[in-house]
Image (cartoon, rainbow, N blue to C red; front, side, top):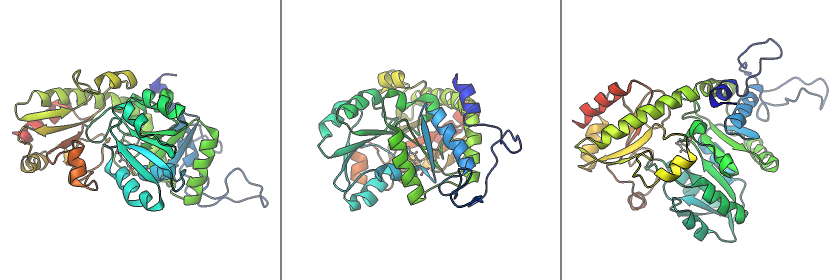
Length: 379
Ligand SMILES: *Cc1c(COP(=O)(O)O)cnc(C)c1O
């Protein structure tokens, strides 16, 4: 089935009771049982909810997975994956990734005896070199937030398989429209559904997708035992968002490309980080594993000072200054002080994330209007 059809019909079955074409919002905490142990498959809403089930089925379908699980946020989904591990286990993670993942790893899970080794995953050989007998998980993000670095999922999956280590890919930036890590050999896909899957900046939610039944059972056990489940209204909103993912992503890609090229030709703009440039370090791998380059990009001004960046950040009108990404409206962000403030400055700078970096989540407004807005702000 082609993507457009898949996204519109994913997980959607008419309600058996009424025929309602949209999955109802089952706003209930419990389900009446006929006799002890005799029920309709639903006992208590932390464990099962029909709206959540429809969404989890949709999650599986859009990532070509057998199973999907929904969580109360993207970091709750990440947290559930780390809970598969035991004290003493090691995780190899990218040295350029979402600040909240870094905070969860370094400030929460390190305290419980899990060790995180950060490396430049854009070279798969670095991942291989970081493997030890204690490595249990490789945590990959591609493209990365905010430098848009690309890692080769298939090459790293081959390394993880040979070492019998789980590979989880944070696929938030690409969305399932542009990239499907399970098809490339990953074991788990993670999404902040808050972003492109919702698409309308109105819900916080996370997703995990996987093919292995045993892995699904372990993660379901964690979901139910730790309780980071989303409410039915939020599940409904993501179900609705997924229906337009393909049309939104098409426009995000088109606008992203136009703005990336326009920025690159602007005389006040320095480096533009966008994997669709043929001379970008990640271009070859991105072209191989992605179906487009998306609507996320970052750039620096030639005057790469925090003051110059601040002027742009506070002068746009269509681009709203805000954290988050992936909504229909365009956002502008200052990673150093906003999304990535939890990463120590030296660490940030060492990994190429400077004080002057500006990140854009290019929305699906008219690209000419967006360019005019940026042009006025850059001056
Ligand atoms: C936002 C984000 C997360 C965290 O998701 P929440 O829904 O905010 O908890 C994880 N990874 C990436 C790449 C993100 O952009």
